[in-house]
Image (tube, rainbow, N blue to C red; front, side, top):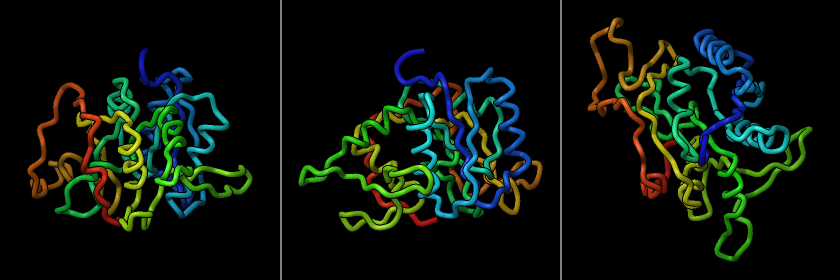
Length: 240
């Protein structure tokens, strides 16, 4: 292992309604059975504010574990150990896997947090961000029972009058800090709604020949190395 390659991973699963879908749990069990203790599960229950939930997970990861990598898994993502291994591959600080939105005709979520890994060094870099006046850029707030946590996962309006939807505020901060990122396109994730929407195709071919509007990029056999400069991350994301 070298660079920022994961060695010990906290698998964080925010779960507002105490429900983890069966297919998601099967993926979790499969990964844990093969991880030989390198993956530690952490389920956060009962927080309907997803930004607050992700901040709580990050606070726990930073202060209560010796893990070097935080892996976010949403409770409605269908995955296999192969998908998990693809995201662990490489030594970038952040790796993100796209997954389908739960709306037919829309392109996949390219920069969501439902299936991604974040190295501990990323949070240390974000802690060092300063505003134009030289003050700390990130805010703080109280997490019940845990103390003061840093607000890494901003949603809503920013100081420069932009709107950041779910998850996009964090990627904006990563772009500002110069974090190394990669989009992992070898994965085949499902996203459970009225059916298991798939990516890169929205629904399984055996259900219907309809594949969505596309075009979808070819899925490579090797990791796609993404440059550090990500101007698209600086654009405000949609509120989903």
